[in-house]
Length: 625
Image (tube, rainbow, N blue to C red; front, side):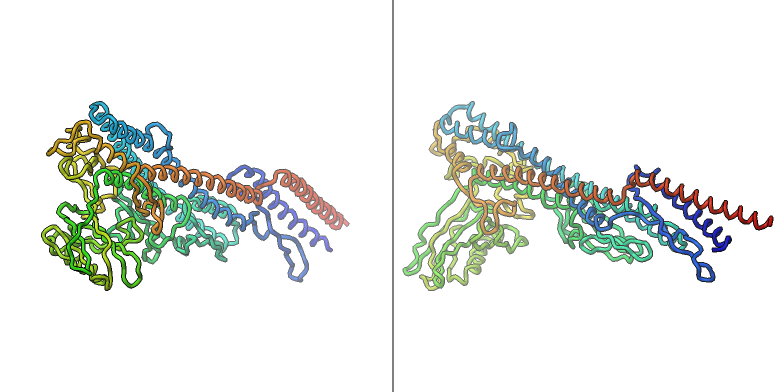
């Protein structure tokens, strides 16, 4: 090797050593900086014009990071963020509902109400006991009202937070897009982009906690972002998320895929080309904080409200409803028929017909529900909790004759003849050719406090105005949000003697326990099928039990759900933290290694400098020779 070649090699070495020293110093200085990844220089050999090696040059700066672990961490972070928020809200709901023993909880105030009703059965004439029944009933109504208010406040919180989160998601996507452009520009100029990639990763890590994302690398150094469901968040240009949040959320305000019917905000993805996608309707958000907020607003909290409404509804109906059995219609044998007077049938009340199908030999159940608004028709079989009945909505607004014709049409295949004589309806089978009638009954709601021919009592009403609660579906489903409106019947508040007196014609004695026993039994002894849409039971096997049983089941399930979410969140946190530690280990600066490298580089620098010194001395010798 000639002196010139040796000098060039030393110069190359010094330059490369200086680059390494600078980078090592930067690693040491930034070791404690959050998001900083260890950097290293990749070198390449420089060849002279004659093809001989003349030195080593810096090629590019690379980051030390395990990209596979990074992908796993971001997916896990999205799930952890989802579970953290779900756990937080479920804990609040659990505290709101309370346990069976919590003072002031819904379970306790219901237990007090039942206990006071029991006391009324033994001392119906005692004014103090009557007053106590009213007070405990008011406590139940108040607790249902306040629970509904709290649930809807939580839904309003989630609505507001969805808006804030969407805004932050847009900011992060925009920041990543800007860095993409800088990286592409710097790479085209052969400049290092490692620090920009660190900054971009910090944005991506935050974004992955807000919404589940998939990151794909482009050859030019940019990244493209998608939801795990495949919706593009960032291609060459960023998409934008928009949220049409609502200022007020109530129990009646629920999300619907039809924008005209939806009463809560939806998240719309607007692509750079201007096309729009409803991310909620198309299930584009599966995890992350944003996914949890949507699920909490539209599913979890709605289900809690449905359960509160189911308690309020069934409690009211249990106390106010009475059943009337059909009577013999006097049909000519072999036909059989039953009559039922429907004069007192209210909207939402039900008529149940049972018959044996001649072909299969199986008993069939048909439920007719009174409606006074034809726009509500047809009703589905899920209008009742019974999984085995066939449901027909009957519009009574056109009179009894029209209602009878509608029932006749519904039963045409079974061979029934339905006729009316005023309010009395007759159901006559075809003598066993197609069917044989086996039962007819109506479930009616008492409208007054006395003289209804029943001890049933409309104890609770819909709102302070005293609107009768029947579970009607006119204009809206009366059950939705009923827990927030349930009130004690104002007529009963004005005259609490009606807790006992139900017949003024023969004047019920003040010590008669009939009504008190009926109320107590309706809550603690009479079993009902509860609506499975509230999340307890299933369509084919609805929860069957008393009102008290259902409330206990509701409290137990909510406690279990909260506990399960807490356990899942804790487990996911462990997984995420482990992945984070692995990711940090793959990119962390090891101070011992860097300091040792610094010493090596200083020695190499000294060696190259010594070569240059020797070459200079040799040149001096030659020049002076």
